[in-house]
Amino acid sequence: MLSKKRLELGNTQASVFTNDPKENLLIMEKLVRKKIKDTGIPMSLALAQFVLESGFGRSELAKNANNLFGMRTLVPY
Image 1 (cartoon, one colour):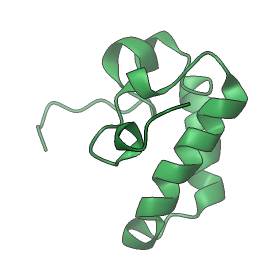
Image 2: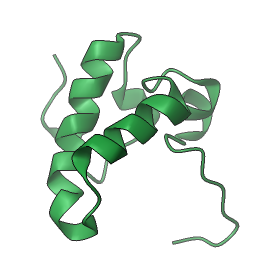
Image 3: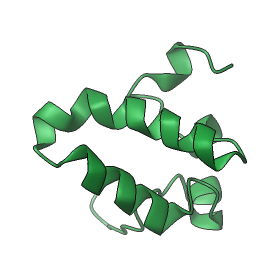
Image 4: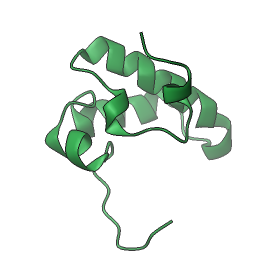
């Protein structure tokens, strides 16, 4: 079982995700639920985009670059 600390929003590294798509969806749901009020983005949309772009957190981009939504930027946040 994943530790509570690893699910904090500050720790959304791809290492949080496993090879189990169902478990990864539950992990992402917890992360999205914490931010849904701040962004106004519907949970269903955020989760659908996560599934589409990262293959449930199992894509090479997700695993190697911690990129869950296929976004690329040159400007650091």
